[in-house]
Length: 497
Ligand SMILES: [Zn+2]
Image (tube, rainbow, N blue to C red; front, side, top):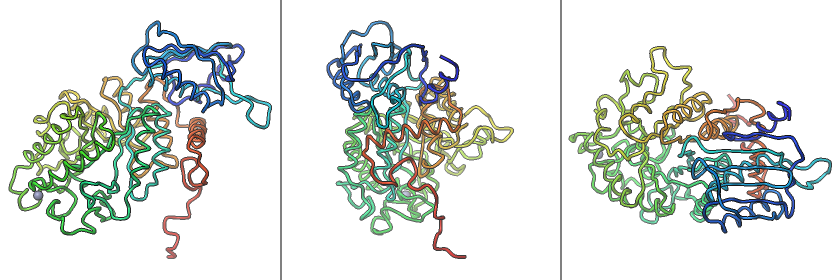
């Protein structure tokens, strides 16, 4: 096999396996009764059933699966091995999730047979794969705005799972129809709970666990601040006392606030089938503590009690809370020069972290390109290092910048941090899709082999997205690919001047 052959085959893989060795020789044909040796440690029956189902879905064939014992060593619960010869495909995996990982790799490797107008079958080239993830927590953060169709969230989830993310934080922006307090979402802009429940179940099938988020400090408007909208107060001025006067942050001295947030967060956690994590937000609470009653209290104590209350609430459910880091460090502190810090000097929250339980997971969101840091800034992601040294588990949370994603992912793997939570916010389409689904997915799994930001990479993602479109049965133009439209009609088409 030539170097070019190997490059072509490798370019199809997102993320790239830790080790893959291609061999010359006749291909293995994916067809009815093709021989498959499946070596698993547990859930043997359900693993065989799952493999059979995926062979049919991916390649429309029914293999002859022989179940065997797992022999030799694997690197962990999610790791797997594949060996492909002309007459046998052998998969070794601990259990279901590792098998899913192996099948995702095989789907990306398989090529359609040549020489006919329509599909006559698929084949795999001979190779050996020995694969395991670098980071245990590989998450994507997805927002559901009133403007977000759930098919788009489903596509993002399927793509993320296909690229071996194993967690998805779901943040509904004023669209979750709470039964406990229906007034805490937009009237007439509520998502379809049945459809969302289907996505939670789908996530389990795909090997990606959905984690709900509710913002318990700032972002209480459940709307982007730049729009002036408020999911609660725009229509319901009676509820003003629950928020600070500007509406952006919750009023922490009002005992009614905590009661309602308890109901909302537990309802969300129940709805998501009580996953092992809950994201409490806590970023950008700029105007926290500004009402008459909060102003007269020490803000650090107010916030500490608030966060600890919810930490304990979820600890009682065996779930850990994840919180954004930025209010825990102070803007202007030279240690964080060039990095995101949102605590204001007058907040005096710089020592708050010392009083927080160490099993809170700190999500360090840093979006910039490290190459554009000021000259006197620490180029080595000091915030994540700081919280890690203070014995917190840390998630690095990049967004769109390719270098920033890759560098943070590499640092997280090198320092054995908790993992990565790739954010997407309102921008994850168009050219940005590759940053999320190629760069972040690649570095979270295998920081040793990051693809270039190139056309071949984009084309691999396009093929994977088509496979997802087939899985979803997409029939509408706007729902294909990762953009609704190919060209823009302009941001203000009716604006003539
Ligand atoms: Zn207040």
